[in-house]
Image (cartoon, rainbow, N blue to C red; front, side, top):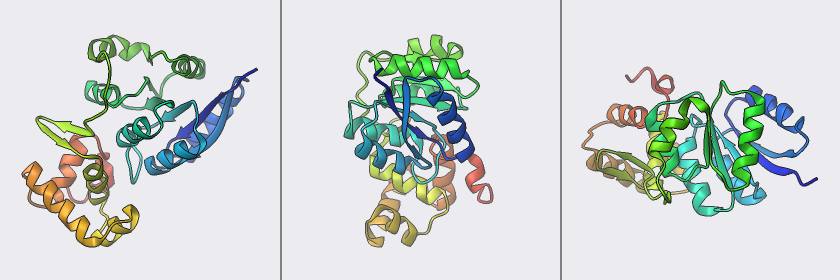
Length: 225
């Protein structure tokens, strides 16, 4: 029997361990890797080439939305299935536009998750029953994934999203530079460009924007707000 190669991306080890046990008990699913950050998810997908990535949205260093966009661009044959605690229309809209093949809420059963993996591996789309009717209205004919983050008429590039998340998580310019492999001067330019583009004037403003756009969760930088 051909087994479906799956990569799990979630920042909670206990969640990944539970998902691995449940999926491998299915018999036709093979978990080939685990990622605890969005950046690891992108790197492992490039290396392992899984058929399906089961992706959480809220992850450190690189959130699941941006990780999905990068995976769809770098490894288009891999299908991304979002598994998240969020069910807001805005999250559903974003993951669809970014090229995700499906969206399940974390309250879903193991059987439903296994079914979703099988369906998206075949090239179909799959959504939790509670969001399926909304997804149908939101689903475009051919997602292009061009917009990394969109709020109003403001569209951020992939690199800008990466810098914004790290800054909003409280990383200093030196830490951001080290994480992304760029110079501190380049980080400073990105920060200035972000503030100009978003009409914001300080790190607290960038953090509030990142939370509103779904890039980070509110508890990450609760002291600033």
